[in-house]
Each structure stands twice: as structure tokens, then as C-alpha cells.
Amino acid sequence: MTPESPPTVQQLLAFYLESGVDCALSDEPVNRLSDPDLMPAAREAAPAQPAVRSLPAAAATTPAPRAEPAAPEAAIRSAREAARTAPSLEALRALMETFDGCALKSTATRLVFADGNPSARIMFVGEAPGREEDLEGLPFVGRSGKLLDRMMAAIGLDRSSAYIANVIPWRPPGNRTPTPQETQICLPFIQRQIELVNPDVLVTLGNPSTQTLLSTREGIMKTRGRWFDYDTGTRKIRALATFHPAYLLRSPSYKKMAWLDLRAIAKALEQAKPQSS
Ligand code: URA
Image (tube, rainbow, N blue to C red; front, side):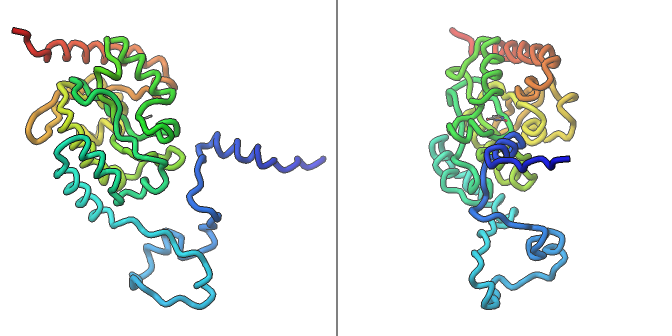
């Protein structure tokens, strides 16, 4: 048998891309299996190291490790304090641009803050930006965004009458699931964003956004189509959970249920309409 020829660089890169590996975290590869210092288990089991250690001469030539992000508790605290002080959406965006407490920021291309009308009566919140969103700096511009646009159009909405954001404003590398710490660090920002937009209706798209914002542990199959009260601290906003458009692209049979949710949203908007005198 003739052995298969090794893949070309192009084939290998195409394979990585297909698998969701589409950005490099550093210039040099790191073999995490060969360096006990980098193994999480070893690190956890090891006694705490002093912050500054003298290194053997040979180690001095190896590249310095990447700066560790602030401990999650400190980062959550500083995100809360920063978000609380933002008097407007512009101020919130500006302080998120300079916030360094979330490690996702260092691998993302840019902040994906929001799209749409900040005075809208309805706000949609997804999970986190994907590749296209990261490149454009706008939420929901890829395939699932096109479906979200069609869903909104079905009830007479578009990006001039709705506001769109994500729980996580920086793209996780390779579209991996954000860690609970990353979500907790970003939570004060989206909470403040919701408070500042102050919509009549909030729509959480998919499980992560629903569980994070509506403080439920139930899955989307149970929560979709249900109304919740979202408490900003100063006001309760009606909130509805529905499927994430990316999920509907994979499972189109659930579009029927999503349509019921959209009709419920349209009705709620109608009911909340300010009476013209
Ligand atoms: N999925 C999300 O949750 N948000 C986006 O912005 C794009 C895809």
C-alpha cells in the first residue's frame, strides 16, 4: 500500500478553518503537554508561587509568558464599577474600549458593541460575536444575522427600529463557548446597556443569553415563548426568550415555534405602544 501523501499547508489551513480554528494566539506553537508548568492540573496542585521568581539562565532566553488577566473577581468588580458610572451608551462603549479585564479582548479583532437604534422599543441580545461580526465590529452580520433580519422583518422591524447586542462583546477565539468567568465579567456591561436603552421588550436569543440575563437554569426548550420580568433595578422590562437564529439554521423545524414567539413579541409591542392623545 502506498502511504497517503501528507496534506499541503493549504489543506491543513482549510481543515483548521473548517474546525473553527481561525486565529493564532501567539507566533510560536506551545506544546502544553510537554511543559508541566503549563498543565492546568499541575498548576492547580502546585503551591502558590511568589509573583516574581529568579529564572535559571537558560529560561531567560524563552519568551515571557503572556500577562495573566486580572483575577476574575477583581475583573468582575471593576466591570461593575465601570459600567455603573457610564451615563450614556457612548460613554459605556468608550469605557469598554479601554477595559482590559476580559482576556477575550486580546484575541478579538475589535469590540462588537451594538447595532440598530438606541431609542428602539425592542432590544435583541445574542451570545457573542462570530467571525464576521468580529471583522465588521457589528453584531449579527453573518448567516445567523441575515436570518435575524428576516425574523425581524416578519413583524415589521429592522435595524432602524430595533437595537441588537450580545452578552459577550468580544469574539471568543474559534467561536468557542465563553467561560462562566468571561460571562460574569461581561455581564455588568450588557446589563448597563439594557438599562440605558430601556426598551419596552427585551428578546434573549438562545440558551446562553436567556440563562445569563433571565437568571434561569432551564434550557431553551422550556424557556422559549415564556415571558419573564427583567429587572433593571429601576424598572421591570418584559422579556421573552426565543431560539437563536444559528440554532434555527441548523434545526429549521423549530422555525414554527420561533414564529409563534415573533407574534407574541409583535403583540407585546402593540400593547406597550404609547397612546397618542
Ligand atoms: N451569534 C451571536 O450570538 N451574536 C452575533 O453577533 C452573531 C452570532
